[in-house]
Amino acid sequence: MERVAHELATSWQRRSSNVVCYSLCPPSSSVPSEHLPVTYKRRCLPCVAFGRVLIPLPSRSLVGMLVAKSSLMVHLPCPSLLLLSLVARLCSADRPISLFWHAFLEPEAGPRGWLVAIYQWLALRWAAIGPSCVVTTSPTLVRALMESGVPEQRIRLLPCCLGSEMELEAAAIWSRRQARLSRTRIDPFRLIYIGRLSSYKCVDRLILAFPSSGASELHIVGDGPERLRLERLASGQSQIGAIVFHGMLSESEKLARLEHSDLLVLPSRSCHEAFGIVQLEAMACGVPALGFNNLRSGMAWVAGLEQALRRTGWRSPQHPTDLSSAINQLAEQPEWLREASIAARLRYERVFARCHWERRLLTSEA
Image 1 (cartoon, rainbow, N blue to C red):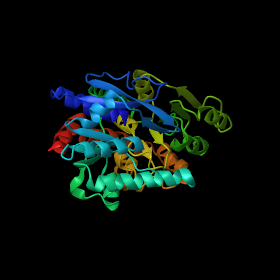
Image 2 (image 1 turned 90 degrees about the vertical axis):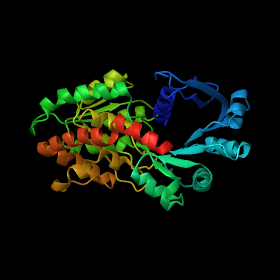
Image 3 (image 1 turned 90 degrees about the horizontal axis):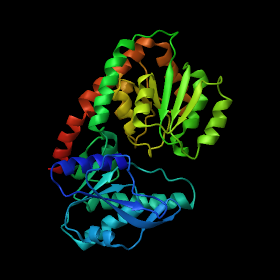
């Protein structure tokens, strides 16, 4: 969500727009995205945290944002931002307000799940009648929004993109990787996971699937609250050194790791995992990405792996028990993997390259 907001703001700023990006900032945090090359204004809205919910506090920046007449884009899911978009509409009935719908949520059992369900119901009702348009990232989410009552004419499709520098670096990696696409069954088959190590990412499924997947190495890039548990789980699942936890890496280190990987795996079946920009990073490097099919997630659509291997009969996993088999087929069929690698790069160029994103952005604003 943060990277999408950054790319939007950067593009608008280049067109001489007076862009301000507002972020909810609890007392213990600093302004986010300090690692990104920010060329636009940023404002931190002071707030207090109640569990994972951030409640904005009264401030001059908050009032200024609510009463302004300029266009406002609100990124969901976030209960507080949903409320702020409603207040902004009350302050100005004709103000252009759009929603960026990043993901659906899956309410868990119990009172907390009830609150999530109520929030999502309210967000969908507001999306259906309130904003000028609702922007989302995949045809899968477009269909899910329509099935949830959002009129088709309100919805704009704008898949995520990579930054210009990242796109150039990935193209150079693809040029080098092409000479190594012809592999055999005896060559090492390297899996990679990139992302936060939190519960809904389900990295434990990948670790459990690894021993029977046919892969020789699993590289896990990222950090989070689940890391210690996952390291303990991994220690009993494979030979020493076969599963490597790298922690947080710089962008250049991450790309270097991708360059020498054969398959990116994102093992979450949750619709919280709705797009996976890291899939674009892998595909731009010529590394195929594997994710689960989900009726409210665009993960499998982004990767396009099943479509690329249609003639082989390979299918995206539908259930966690299918994961090791799906990986094993690619490990045992080097020609399938070669096709998947070429298809991943071509899909990136034809669907997700930044030139296409810029064009779609202009269309969505029309």
